[in-house]
Length: 334
Image 1 (cartoon, rainbow, N blue to C red):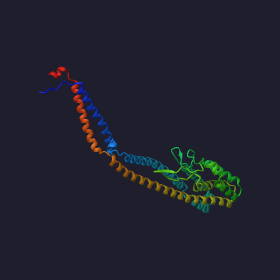
Image 2 (tube, rainbow, N blue to C red):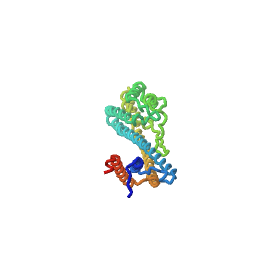
Image 3 (cartoon, rainbow, N blue to C red):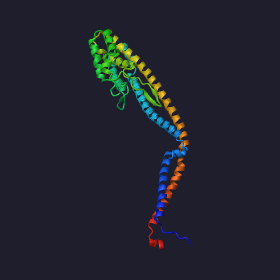
């Protein structure tokens, strides 16, 4: 009859190795169950790991592009919202100013003047749009607020109204203020850069030009029309002179609203282009993910089943080891 010997060091060592192997395998299968990817890519691809690494790099690039695209979408959405807000704040004031002037004369115009000042503040506030600390309409100078305070503009144009003289001289001075590269708008009001902001990165090496700045013609006309309507009554002019200046402001305001609508359309085209790029990236990601899973994927249900089996085996090994380690010579001889 063959007798089993008393547990010795070799037996304990072998059992500890078994437990160590179970723990190592448990760790591997745990990761595979979570990631759905085999831990040993070399084994999974029969040594041909290059293709798997290329696909993984492509997937990482798409994820990075998706993050950039999301930031760009936010930038575009906020810029579009600012332009829409400016257009809404204009509230058709150009047309209504003409009607007020024709129907109510100076009295009707004065009512519109108060509204124009309020609208001016709203438009400048909307166009001072920020994404975090980034000023979206300041061109390359994203750390600079797009416009100075509305009161600076109001004071500048009131000074022109009071000192320029005739209606023609007032119109000429306001034209120079807003249109000249050295005029007051560029030196006192617009605080951004004369260079465009960097292109919008939409991922996969693609970009969209985003050249819209606070000194855009539609924005300048919006401020010019509103501030002229708001301050025309400050000019020491006769009735005809006042009508000329006020009507000029109304005409510019009307053109500005059309310009803002056109600007919204241009931004809409950029948003559509960005959306199509994001759709292409998602389709490419789905295709690459399938290819990657076919190469190195691990069935997560299967991994979970193996994980449960390993946990049971490890628990059993611990119980057996614990019982054996508690044996004494007297217990063994019973």
